[in-house]
Length: 238
Ligand SMILES: [Zn+2]
Ligand SMILES: [Zn+2]
Image (cartoon, rainbow, N blue to C red; front, side):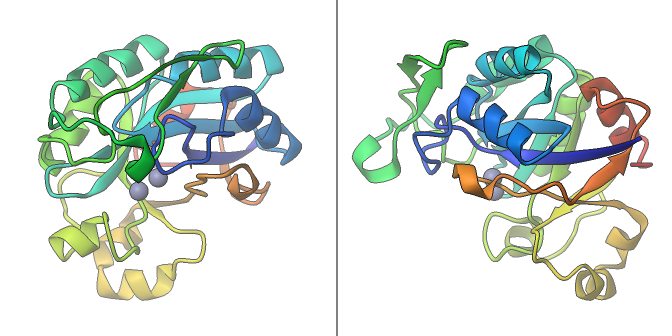
């Protein structure tokens, strides 16, 4: 079946995202847009995944718990997990790899944790926008150990991408790469032939509700479950 997706969405936990990116609002907007599966990928944290997965379950929407990790080289990598347990284990691992910088909400933005009733349950005190000490080589291995899948984010962007930070698309085992919605895949493929053999994923990277993806991008899956999506991503056959 055709499964319409958006696998890169930020909630109010990301300092740079709107405060109204709450689990309810994200799920309702994704449903309005006609999406079948979404992933929550906040910067360096999965702490809003428990609420979002629960809200999505009640609404009949498939949700993948995830994170947009900032590596030590300042590359953004989308990490997706088959279960909340795996996501929260990764969250704890990453938390220990972040620099101890306190967030200043007035400068960087708020980092709000929500509960399943869409109420504020707390704030993350350390700055989530900083680079972790996890290298890009290590990400895929750590994520796979937990049964997940990962792919470099927005590789065509001039900042926080593998191309901007490393100067190339590294051949280190990633089976998929994300390109921005308006990215030029043909030009990228000519310059970096490696990506021609890989799965290319287009996500919204939404930081506000209106930017959540439309019903445009789809993958062929037996069913729209996180497990099947991740398995196909890891086999490179999405
Ligand atoms: Zn990013
Ligand atoms: Zn992002």
